[in-house]
Amino acid sequence: MQTQRQEWWFEEVEALVDRLIEDKAGLREQEEAWDFIGQGCGPEALATAKKMFAERSAPKPKEEPTEEPEAEPEPDVGDGGAALILSKKAPYDNAKVFVRQHCYKEGVLAVYWYDGSFWEWNGRCYQKMGMDDIERDVWDFLDEAKAGVINDSSRFKPTPNNVTDLIKGLKALLAVPYDAPRWLDGRPGGNLLVFRNGVVDIETGELMKPSPKLWIHHELDFDYDPNARCELWERWLGEVFAGDAETQECIEEQLGLGMTNEVKFQKGFLWIGKKGREGKGTLAFILERLCGSGAYASLSFHTWLRGEYSSEVLIGKKVGVFPDVRFKDVKWYGQN
Image 1 (cartoon, rainbow, N blue to C red):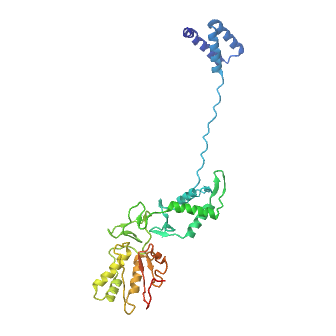
Image 2: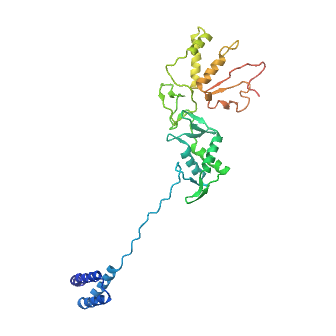
Image 3: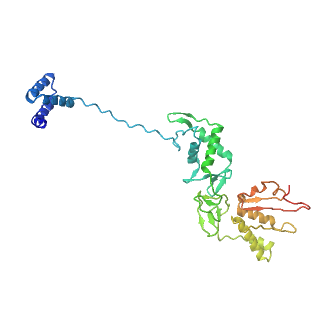
């Protein structure tokens, strides 16, 4: 029944209400319309009309412009000029920022912690860094930063403890688990030599571009040339070992083996001279040049094995040479 009654009055009531709103009718006009609807359509239609009028004539609330909240600026870790904001309570996080800023070269991590020292790639190989250099860089890094949060920060003012804590974080972040030579993706390094003009695989002869992805510590200060000849060297060998081609070849094998990381033979070489000035010092000099000074250790029987850590000097070396051995009578070398 209700639906049937609405069907005959609803559209007429709606049209009348819309007209009142459109004409901005005053109270008198509204009262006259309500009397007309109530008498002609009944109380239900009157109630519907008043409700419809109230809903449709009510002013719409103004839509406040929605402002996007300003994004919180990220700390500037580049060269943008803004001071970096760090936390004094998060030295490990600060160490991560330091690594991003100071420890990458060519987009590759190029600083590591190994065997009690920091090592940095110098463009050809990894070179041991002085702890004073690391500490200076960390002091500067913290001193240029701010402490606190964005929009509420002040100068960091680093203390020795801040520096020490950050360096501890660097040691944890940059520790490398491999002995050199080794590719930092885990591949073995094989017998690789670093020359001024590239890295040579002595087993294949391949010449490669130096890369910070190669964990290697020694370099040579001359170029690789597979066709190189040294007439002075050949003449010297011919004079010292005249007519002895086998000894000449053996000497060159010894020098070549000393350049490599090969230790499978577990042998040493003894150069014996009767009168002095017979080439032993020259051979030792040439061997140091071929290995690189960083891979060469000069030893002495007077101090060899005298203490528990005497052989520590051989760590990371390719060859150890006793350049001038003169045994004394009634002396057991190596005893305290």
